Amino acid sequence: MVIEGKNLIGFTQSAQGERTFRGFNPRSASALDPAFHEASQSEIDRALELAAEAAVTLRSVSAEKRADFLLAIREEILALGDVLVERAAQESGLDMARLQGERDRTTNQLKLFADIVKEGSWVDARIDTPLEDRKPLPRADIRRMLRPIGPVVVFGASNFPLAFSVAGGDTTAAFAAGNPVVVKGHPAHPGTSELVAGAIAKTVKAQGLPEGTFSLLHATSPEVSIALVKHRETRAVGFTGSQKAGRALFDAAARRPDPIPVYAEMGSTNPLFVFPSAIQGKAAKLAEALFKSATISVGQMCTCPGLVFGVESEDFRSLVSGLAEYFEKGTPGTMLTPGVAKLYEERFRSAAGVETVAVHKSANGAASQRTEGQPGLIVTDAPTWLGNETLHEEIFGPATVVVRCGSAAEVMQCAEKLAGSLTAAIHGNVDELAANGGLVDLLSRKAGRLIFNGFPTGVEVGYAMHHGGPYPATTDEKFTSVGSAAILRFARPLCYQNFPEALLPPELRNANPRGIWRNIDGRLTRDPL
Image 1 (cartoon, rainbow, N blue to C red):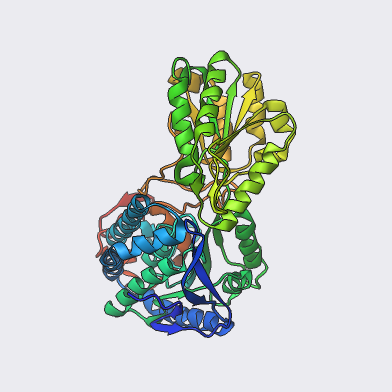
Image 2 (image 1 turned 120 degrees about the vertical axis):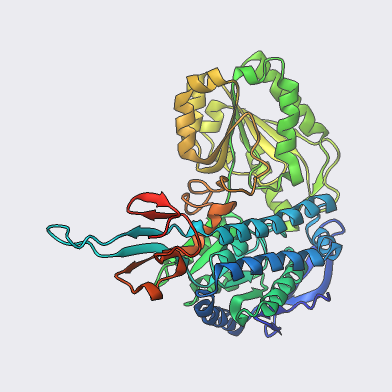
């Protein structure tokens, strides 16, 4: 497939915008062909107007056809072969093995959501049967289920050019719920985005779905992003990226005459707490595992552990010493973009500039390219950490901050000061976990996922996963961007009262033709009425 550098609006390639940009190879520090045209306002309008038209048809498309659609997208992505991962490697600096795994994750989540749609119980059907003789007033026939929300705008993420991008979790969940999608591709991997977009558009056409089911728009300017969020036809937004950008989209949505939800996943420090048993004779092993988790993919994952807390002891000093040695010997790695590398260096330098902290940075030479990031460790004590907000912030890259605490009370003081996070991890034994119920309870209010004797990196795409957390980790902690529950972001409840049987959706009809689980008068059942 030839990459054209154009926007894809429905079935039509379009290049009306005067501004262009190019992809960038961070390994060779060179621009990539072709030039990509930024979307104009008229292209934005056309994409969302088509999406609004498509939404009317998609609401009545059967679950079986939606599932087939997702599976067909999966096959088209696989059919792209290594051309896709090779282009993604050029644009991201990520290695082929990592990207092949990411492609598997992308195609597997398409299958997961196809299974969810086929089974059908995700719509949360509820029926209160009529009580005509109830006093003082009778009860009507009331039925409720989740329905598609309408056109969804999805923003691709820089650090996952496949799994959180054009056919990533947001797009897949929105399609599964029965919505059209307009993707604003991330400018860090425009060619990859176009390849996947072509696979989706081909599938839309082959499946006989309306043209506005999918569009891809390119842009580097924030104005395009804001215009997409503010457009009258946009009904919901999915975003993964920085707190600054996510908050800008959230605020723009809130200022609309009709505010809409923005499900933004943003910065996260993913604190890790170490109890004594975790390092008694095991400090070296934990140091190695912690270093790997903090620096995987050059630290460019939203779940890398950015803060480590423990009570000062000989064993804890051994852990810190071992960790420092790993970071000092660490190899600089290519980061996603020059901008990401620059921001990493700025934030690390700012944290390292706090008085009294100890800094352990890779001794393997200065970064030879402007897109390389050097592993770095910052070690401080609890009073210094508590008194310096700079040390609380996420350093997106191959770095972590260790906080030496003088007592369990200081550990709790630090935990109380933590901002919302995607994850929080505790290493120790069962007795220590039980004895520190206060800390566990506190962390349960600070994070969306609690981990015992494990590391936050590696997010399973399944039915029980929750990838979200209190602000600023996300803009709505009730929802996840990974796993089966991600579909709930792009659906809205609709209640039918005294509706004729023939005009109800299949999921709410007496016979329960789809055989889904339903709540009938407070009882969960697959039985017909």
